[in-house]
Image 1: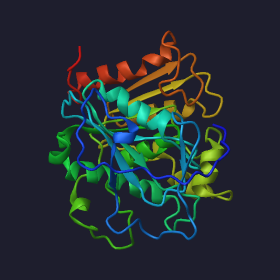
Image 2 (image 1 turned 60 degrees about the vertical axis):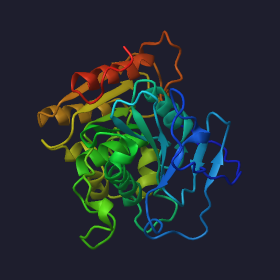
Image 3 (image 1 turned 45 degrees about the vertical axis):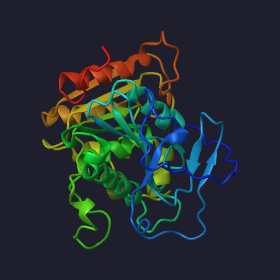
Length: 323
């Protein structure tokens, strides 16, 4: 994915706390924004300013100083929830194409969606590569700890990530029991006592491995730096940490992806099969990279949301409200 020219228009995601959905889906302007950290994220860097740039329906977010969840509610909520994690090579976040667009699509089928704005590891955070993982784990806990408020079932909270966001989702699926906020092995607050493990997960055209020859080197560089050792690369290769406790997963990609080798997807699938973890994989002939929901309807890869919903309904994660 090519880096886009950033036009600094200093913007913030505005909160409309407590606003209920009145239609089939929440619009980006009406999304409630929930901060992840009560006193700000750990180890903030200096001189970092949040920026939102690009067309109104294809915004790019960088400089995330206040990690948050944007809540998209459905008028036909079925009690399920999805944490949605946009990609962007760990250098930016495609907050619409792989965030709000996805949230509103799943709202139509009764899913309450939470779009994550997470810290980027190369923006000077003291936690480095742990910063986005800590945000994603914290996000899962915030969702579950507030399940009654959001009207969701804590046993049906999944995560769905794209590209580098897929790496982040795969990482929390295999690392949910780790303490990553500080060196002290104690909860930050009552929210940290909630379970961070996704009930299920989905990844689209994901970055998974940080090891040659299949690593997406741009994501690896932005996550780990230019001189990452083999040990560091291995420690951030999600396929190496799959266990029998890894949640069920839905994986999809396109064979003609010019940026992230499809072996990232097949390696994760193979690792899950080896541990007898339920997984379904779809490799579409065409679609390229970063397609989200923006393929022509006749393109087979455009069917991935319906396939994901069908897969989740078969396992009772989603309920058939609109069929």
